[in-house]
Amino acid sequence: MNARDPLLPLQPDEATAIAAFASKAWDEQIVPALTDYIAIPAKSPMFDADWQANGHIERVVRDAASWVEGQKIAGLKLEVVRLPGRTPVIFFEVPATKAGGNGPGADTICLYGHLDKQPEFNGWRNDLGPWTPKYENGLLYGRGGADDGYAIYASITAIAALDRQGIPRPRCVGVIESCEESGSFDLPAYIDLLRPRLGNVALVVCLDSGAGNYDQLWLTTSLRGNVTGTLKVEILTEGVHSGDSSGLVPSSFRILRQVLDRLEDSKTGNLLPQAFHCEIPADRLEQARATARILGDEVWKRFPWACGADGGPTLPTTTDPTQALLNRTWKPTLSVTGADGFPELKNAGNVLRPHTAFKLSLRLPPLVDGNRAAAELKALLEDNAPYNARVTFAADGRVGAQGASGWNAPSLAPWLEDALNAASGAHFGAPCGYIGQGGTIPLMSMLQQGFPKAQMMVCGVLGPKSNAHGPNEFLHVPYGKKLTAAVAQVMAACP
Image (cartoon, rainbow, N blue to C red; front, side, top):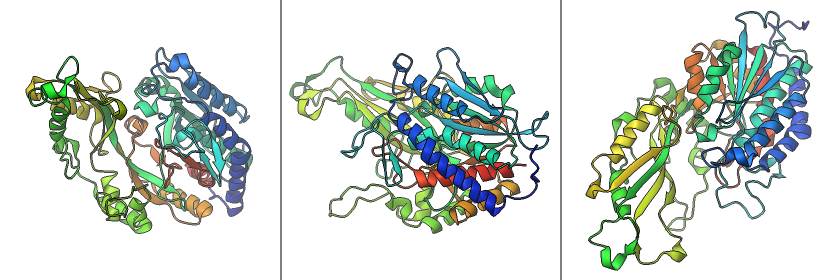
């Protein structure tokens, strides 16, 4: 057992040693591993129906598992867990190095990440691409590195950094899935299966989130939920001459617009059903105001605005920093992310099309139940269709898990608040920031329900312009190094 007194706070020389270890590991091992990872088109099952046959998910899971086993951490056990018809999960466990940390009921730290990716998207810089990694000026470009293929590598490095310095820590387990970008519909079955092996989870470390800037550690305080699916309107069995039919045959696109008007005020973007809204807790309002004072106009200026009608940039829904933060974290919002039933412009003749289909993404406030919202959305869109058109909404996911619920973090325990600020100060020279995120991580609500007393450290490398899901996605390596060291320091402080 380590001779170091576990009750002592981390000393400056220990923090420096952890930072040096993490930096070297990133340069020599993590960046090369992620470079190989980015080159593999391991798209999530929602975007690759033949994922099993294609073998890309299998490849990244096997590569990550081999890398972890190669780190030679004392006592580490790793298993690639497989359930029939579901994407695989990496589960690892490492015994505690603190006194009494392996006894019955001892606290466990659960580390989470995922290895599946979003699809390619278009608009990548000419010298970049989703599957062509490029390391330039501290930024590692390519799909999935920041969202969040790095998580398993950073998690293991944080554990190794403590062990190499003889700094005691609790027992650690890791859950690395490969279905997150599809809404994690496979994950509940694995959590049920693995629950007896998770132990008494006292701290969850999730590295699938974002940062307000690259100047400090950022803790995610909330996540939105999400319902995705396809809305389709059918009016004919085949396309017909628009000159012959228009004015008599209603346009499927116009019908779809009418149906969406039930959901959204197109002038403001506000969602009309009150069931998709929730009251914002007072502490989250105050945190949003504090974060707005830190980030200012960068809250909205960080996006790649197009050139507007007057030659200036196009504009956001609001330029007030506080309201901007709340809009993207606590306000329900509809996005249309894809369309079907349209020919390419070069092939668009004078034909009234038989159907129109939109892929919808409905972001939900953290306190709205995702499955209930999916059912209410389906009824809202399908009932009483104009012109008796065939209107269908098919939510993604599986029966019983067609919507992903959001998450509102529990109150911070004093030890975690102190540890976050100490780690941010040691490795960034600034206090920890607090920010809600507009994305969705289904596991967080699952774990909070299963382990209501656990503390949550949700953070990540997705800072300004990192552009996960879009073109030119990058991982800010200097920030990744500091985040890894900060995670290790917080883990050491876990009681």
